[in-house]
Length: 428
Image 1 (cartoon, rainbow, N blue to C red):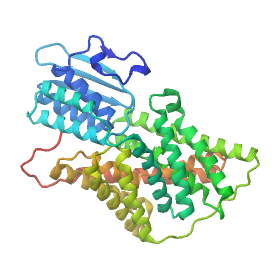
Image 2 (cartoon, rainbow, N blue to C red):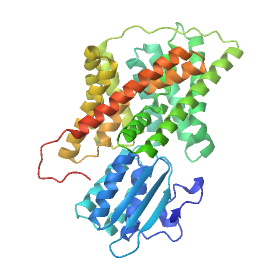
Image 3 (tube, rainbow, N blue to C red):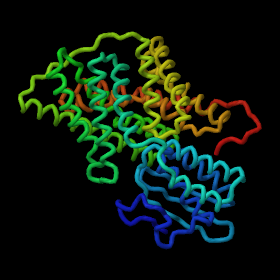
Image 4 (cartoon, helix red, strand yellow):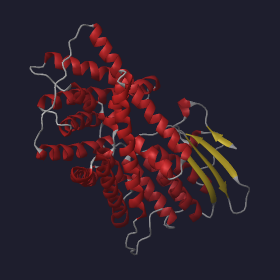
């Protein structure tokens, strides 16, 4: 077995710098680099394995591939040589939709016979060296915009929106500072939750009227909540990717616990300093303002997912479709079946976009599921358990599980719906 790993510090380096690694111009080298690129840019295990199977078959190779959140193992069976097994140590990458789109298009062109493995490998190298579509300050500002909009979606007023925006700006700055700093990166959820909680209570202390502190804190931390990872984990379990799904589910639970610990520590420190916290309640807000907030939040997600500016329209369509379907379905059927209907809507839209416009499913699924996933509810559950409100915490946790199962069920049903055939080849 050939293992491409030295240590955690080197897990993201190029395979070109690993001694004795297959050259990128060889089919094996291309397949290894393609799998690592797809994993790094945020493709779920079931989609990555399907893509690798298609590419290997196009290059006349047999393959057995297993993707995990921190590693990829592949056994390649060349037509005229002994099988070779490779293990690649990778870090769970951030979603980068621009590079993911370009990488999946390269894979599709190899599958269709339009590119050789050598040409595909050179194209992958060009993608990896491309610059981010937005500067870092735009990404930090997007944290603030999305946090303010989420506060409105949670029926927060102007005070909650401004407070959440300030916290989101600080959280975005900390997230940028944590890059290439492993210790801060590992402690980022706890540290951000600690800072966000203290900031929310300090703002509430000097505000002219009571604020809904829970809405402010959750909105400010919304980007760090692993609701999307939780849903992907359940989808992987539902598609029989048991090891990957279990590992991702455990990782999401760990982030929830870190966030709850940071908030609990912030509350205890505030009490020690003598703060008197009064948590206000929210009032109903006009429905049109919530729709507007959802639209602006969708546009704010474009830099955070590192998508291209021209892809903003897809974010807008996906987020508004998800929000609209969930809102009306929930009114008639309840929150769980509302999430189920929303997942079906987003799944079908992703299939149609892939068939008609050759877009990767993630372009629709990511922004759509951000609106659907129960990340904020899961955070409330863990925080209630930390504060020893066991009954309430378990009730919320059960709601999270039901909503998550509904999302996965809707996603799986949408994936089974056949679309009309056309002249184009199916993706992957």
